[in-house]
Length: 106
Image 1 (tube, helix red, strand yellow):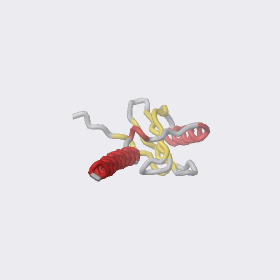
Image 2 (cartoon, helix red, strand yellow):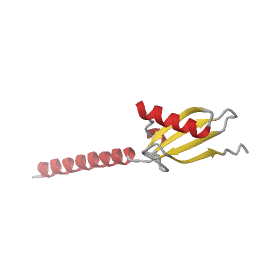
Image 3 (cartoon, rainbow, N blue to C red):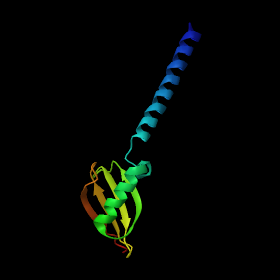
Image 4 (tube, rainbow, N blue to C red):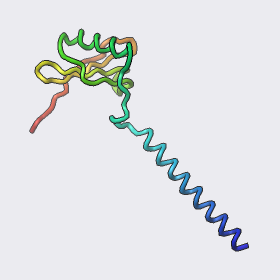
């Protein structure tokens, strides 16, 4: 009987380790990390870029994001003077806002 109890205890410990590992994987996969954000692609990228550049009148698209916390699409545009502006678009590609990223170098 002792050998059977030992096998049961080992099996239970193994399941605990596997379950804990799965929990860590799930937690790591659902974090709000900028490295996991999806960029805009395809025709949506072309349309979002055109709208953002038309809204600002200058600059170049340097980054995009789908499902931003502030809007459906976010298009980062770098202006000629180096200022970065985040243009927020809704799912219909209408401008929600356009805010410059202010950086304090001090």
